[in-house]
Image (cartoon, rainbow, N blue to C red; front, side):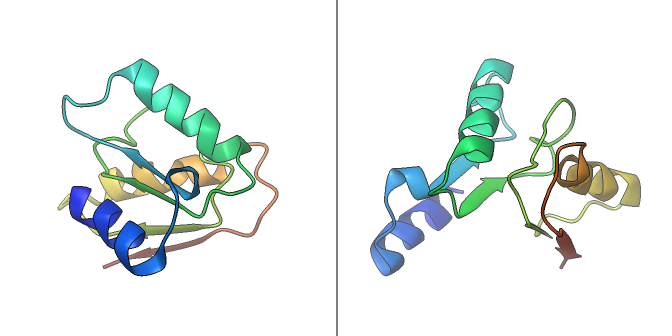
Length: 101
């Protein structure tokens, strides 16, 4: 995740408010994830939200998303479906495209 953050800043010149990160490890508390989710969904500048399938486990709404790309595909397909699901929650007004690698 840190590499992707650095890459966006260096190559695209993106600012902090244009991308968000939800870590799936112990770096993010549930309150951190909730705050990041709210900022992403309500931001007019947001372009990308990075997060692992572990981070998108439960209680996340990503109605601000229009594309979901899964890079860390799990052996159990239900984990992948659960990670894509938050983009389809009630309140979604955009067409959502989901892909996995």
